[in-house]
Image (tube, rainbow, N blue to C red):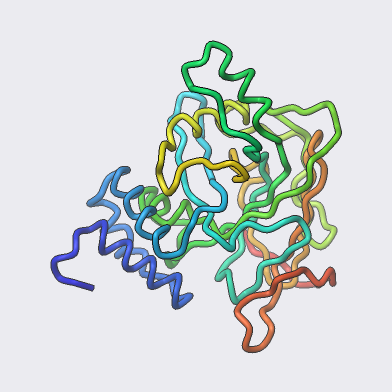
Length: 278
């Protein structure tokens, strides 16, 4: 690392190296650098990482409360997969699971200042059930400083999306959900969307993201916050989610084949391996 590197450059360099080596950077160093850069610096780190590994294929956003600003974090190329695909231990060092409502942008949004912007925008998107695979490039990332997590694309490891549903009833504030690991219930019942209505979260993201990491593009999917908390799973776990009005989504965390850092498709075999919690 160059002695004259700025904190933004130093953190980006370390995160890029961690992605390439699959060896996370020390949390103490990530927190130290993140403490010197502020939110805009964290987004600058994202842009440098995206230049190295992009383009952005999808987006992670969310907020804890309705009054809070949303965040933006790109899901990089290769990390977006259709339901039924898996992620392997050659790709993820850890595997947290978040069941979420996502929105796929099917056509460009209308001008933000349009009088009927929200109504028009609803016709531009398709809601989908998605599962986010959570992993970080920082050692002990769940305990990292908030700006360190943001710089590391909010600890995103990948995103799996379900298919379009014909169901008419869709609750975007507190849908009924089900999440299972190897057919065992982990989360069931109605769960609130963090930060309120999921579509409002999407719109807030669309307004704030601008041209960051290429901006929001047609075909991209935007997540809106976990409905399931953040449980972690061990390799050999089949993960199945369901959201009322959106239907099912399915993935797995599998052992990498010998000498292979990626596993492109889920085997469908179930395992008795346990899980660990965050």
